[in-house]
Image (cartoon, rainbow, N blue to C red; front, side):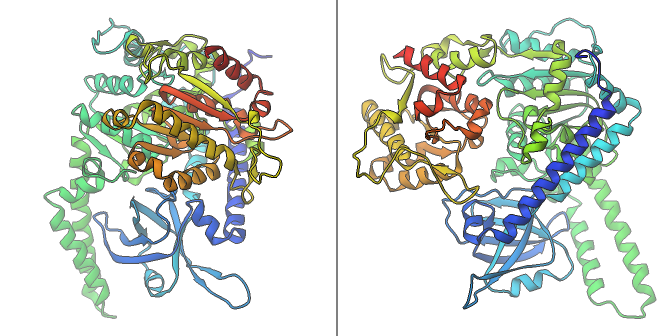
Amino acid sequence: MENQQVSPILALQQQRLLLQMEYQAEKEAFRKQTEEMGLQRKVKRGDAWYPLKMGKSYYNSLNQLVVEVFRQGDEEIEHNFEFGKPVVFFATKASQTSQASIHYFPFTATVSYVDGDRMVIAVPDNGQLIDVQGAENVGVQLFFDETSYKMMFDALDRVMKAKGRLGYLRDLFYSHQQAETFSFADIHLPYLNATQEAAVNKVLRAKDVAIVHGPPGTGKTTTLVEAIYETLRRENQVLVCAQSNMAVDWISEKLVDRGVNVLRIGNPTRVNDKMLSFTYERRFEAHPDYDQLWAIRKAIRELRAQRKRRDDKYHQKLDRLKERATELEVRINAQLFGEARVIACTLVGSANRLLEGQKFGTLFIDEAAQALEAACWIPIRRVSRVILAGDHCQLPPTVKSFEALKAGLGKTLMERIAENKPEVVTLLKMQYRMNEEIMRFSSDWFYGNQVESAPEVKFRSILDLDIPMTWIDTSQFELPEDSDITFKETFVGESFGRINKAEAELTLLALEQYFEKIGKARILDERLDVGVISPYRAQVQYLRRQLKNKEFFKPYRHLISVNTVDGFQGQERDIILISLVRANDEGQIGFLRDLRRMNVAITRARMKLIILGDASTMTRHPFYRKLYEYIDALA
């Protein structure tokens, strides 16, 4: 039975049903959150800004009406607003009897960009913004993202019906049929290692598909950038996508550093001049014909505003102006797209009307193991071959519906192709980040012991004779009977997560002691950086507050970041501390059972990893038992 092929159409229909389940689950969760969750909780979770100060409104270079808003709340809270996300404005009225009532304005807006506590939001141009500007106690919150789902459903429908190249790729990805390749001699790239070079060659030879599987620290981005660079010697233009805006920024920046002309559709998550300079919006504004276009658009707006009722000439004038504006827009676009060698955007962003009718030889998808399959099909329809890069042993796509997850919605296109066609995969085997002992456990458990350490990092450590990994077992601590602190986890609000305050205190204490061993001068001279990771958001916020209040850490604040596992995706630090939080008598470890998260957490560390957790709770799971024993044996 195993070897029988499921028909791709049936499999995609099944996926559409699961996506529908996920859509309903997320929509329902969103409705609940909007109706039942208190405003403060939403602000705390980073899903709302309140109170807001309204700034100016104006038309941006893309002719959208936008409004500036400023957050006046707690700047410590990391928020979830970024380019392209839908938002809705609301106002609160205080009532004597009950909680403040929230009134939502009847239109959806979209984030254009965010920089610190300032956000620019594109709003519909229909006069409704005036109500918001005139209201008191205004806030803005994230809205349910209907558009992304619509695009994913649309992509699945299109793939199911597809003939031609798209149909060919669909049938290929869902079968064991051999992918086609070109045959030419290897090219030699002296600055890459053997597996990186093999990966680039495999990409260049692939007629249909290739996968670059990059375990932590193995230079996946470097390899991908080289593969794109070499592909551009053979093709005029390629499409580069990733699931998140952050991943798109990261690869765009590396390509720009290599001297490649990148056109970034959408706005970057880090707003600085370097990142903004290659965005479509900036380039559009900088075009010599832009001033003329702006003047025409202004004339159109003025004409509309002073429209006389029975003016025959009005329509003629308007049509003429509109025609002229369109002509200029088309001309500017043709030039921007003509010059660019790489078009970069998120997977969903590839449905942007700017790309209408565009075709590309090759699509590169970075962080492909974090993207739902349906999202990957959105850009695939524009290309004739697909290169995926990522690591399916690290963070998976986010799926909110447990049923959909259980039924396989979390299985990515990259995993599917890797299973069906192991021959198109290259595993990068040389890592440049971690001390050998930190890396060894991950390599054994996740990568069949195939990853090796580069000689220059193999024995890296901060202190002589330091043990690179330690586990501080919180169940070993005896607390006085009458103590009101405990090393057991507690709940903070439903769904906001779990917290373990005693463990948090101990985490910072462990860091303080380690810092004292190294010495202040050396930490500051060598800029030793630290990541404090916890899988739970509540614990992260608690740790941040504690860190801020501790006098000892004042000189080192700029060197320490505290975040969730997802927040550290793709990053590394000299020293990593992980607070596991879970401590209970039942041995429940919740989503820590998803070992890919733990793989990400432990592989962020270059030289020192300190894990804090209740061993009696954690080691009931075979993975954590093995990890605990492994660390124990190092001591």
